[in-house]
Length: 290
Image (cartoon, rainbow, N blue to C red; front, side, top):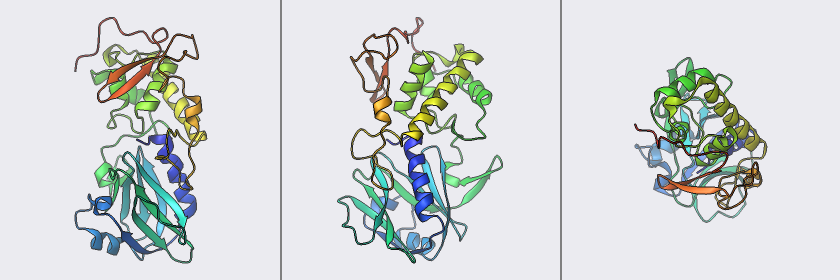
């Protein structure tokens, strides 16, 4: 699933290509593309067509377009969603689910989603801690690349969670935008095992962990994100190349870049965690108890 660097790369590309453009038409080609927009396709089209896209924003893994009407189009890419800016004459993609056409341009925005887990809806903004966010994601916390992110506040929240470090990093109500890949990479950089209890995390260790999180996210942003297959691409259809810089994720059995020990893979919910057995020893007391 795309994480913060991938979604931010897409947001920046969309801001460059569609901010300021006026929507002339919306075509919904698969009902699942707007399944969360309960009023349906006709209402979606009526609330978007004829309005200008004033800005493209992001919070964590969510994107939204702010329309001149005051409404917003909120989107999530799910497992395989893509937002592509294409020439109107280009052939349709195999898994094209929706398209947005613009005035005075030969390009259009296409939502492509092989697995149809992503989607869009039209909604409103609400006030949250001196910010305006779409109602549906008002509970999503700031992310580590947000200028208003407060490390000490998040570390206090993490220590109060009484959970495991990796689970805390993936809790979008505490800190947003971090997924499985970047959690593993940050934990490796901070020399912490993901099953370590948040209760025993010192303030200094917490700051070091989020410094590692910020560092790995910034590097991934510079590389355009991480692509393992054709499912994640930016708005131009290009893949990110941070996968070349991954230290542990997906590297089972390969030598740790820091100490040479073979990287281990451990089950984590329905996914996997990757770590170095020497640099990141398992906690002696076992996994944290909720």
